[in-house]
Image (cartoon, rainbow, N blue to C red; front, side):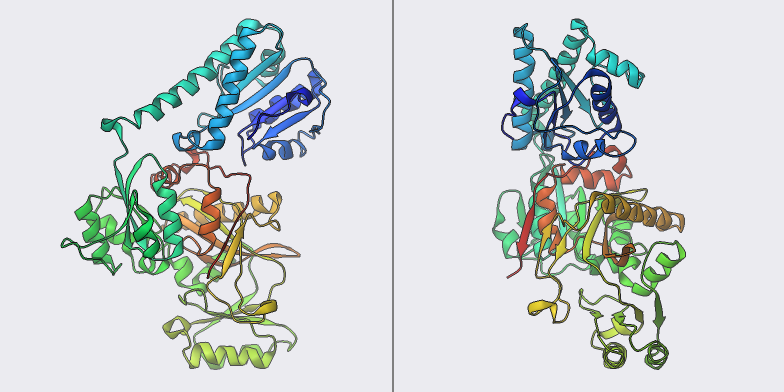
Length: 522
């Protein structure tokens, strides 16, 4: 973090990450409009600064000073979880806030007010939740020493409780005890295992079957073994259920799509009813298992996607293509699971017909090509947008872009992804909100049809000149997108997963670092 230069700051915003609570926006906007504040120093809080520029606030703050008020305002976002509080950045921020509180109380010459926002309760500490916007501004910007002391006391008390919780983690009787079974064997599962193991609430992450990386990771992470100690190499439903029962797992996290499509979540709900499972049911996984189903779902609910037709006959598909303008480029997709490789991108009508034959007649992707989707080719940047879902709503993660097509100049076939980076600059904050709204609508409509969606919804998006449009849905974390998105997550991943499983995602402040991440598959 680094200690900010307070000589040029009227307002210091600390630790808000990607969130911009309305209460904080109103407080800062009123400070500028009514109390002469001019300059701001954001510390991991760029989202607040950006949100202030938009309606209804239209508040511009100069980050280069000079200060316009004699009384400095520090607005601090209390870390929403113990895991986040224990991060290096949060510890530096908490130490800074403490030092300013102590300095202000011991020095009458320090004109400074520190206000702490608790995102878990959506309220400022030490201020009545019933206070109006005008009351809030009056309280904070007034010269009431007793009130300022009350704010300081509330902030120190909250930090003290976090310290106590951190200390409790060191005691044997309160040491983390939850066991997580993680299904899968890829780099995605390695990244998930590391993120889950970082939680103070998790004692063990058992990977089934895992890989060489998870085998050698050590610490809380291990690969699954049978009762006789031999490695478990399978991840079928029966093997998952047996392992979960034997190790007394508290949660199962399903990485790849095939077990989800095979109904492992449904099987666990029946055989292990007390165990949380992060992942959609077999009915929910239909969003990835059938591109034809997804296209129909998107069209039915007015979620933007390309014009399309689905076919179970190669002859019918070819006849449709021949009826189109030869210059109207099409994309040909195997409807079923094809390990991320079932999308062909022909450039001419003749190549489109060849692609249909390859998928439907030659069975290049097996039974996945029994049904074929032919859709209009869309132009624009492509982005991978992953959202946490709890059956009720969705929270979007930073968008990523993966390196999909082989060969220089993107001239080759689609691969499963050869590398990725996040966040993707092409997904602006406005587009991020628009895409999140599409994910929320998808979760709501899945619930309405009696198939609530819990887990990760991976929306492959095309950012067309007419706005974002859904290319496809996947029912799990992407690989390699997971490897670049999870390192940016500040909130405890295990807490997020628990909230999703319990239908309480709206109670978690899902936050990401203001940073960048990249990975290459070699």
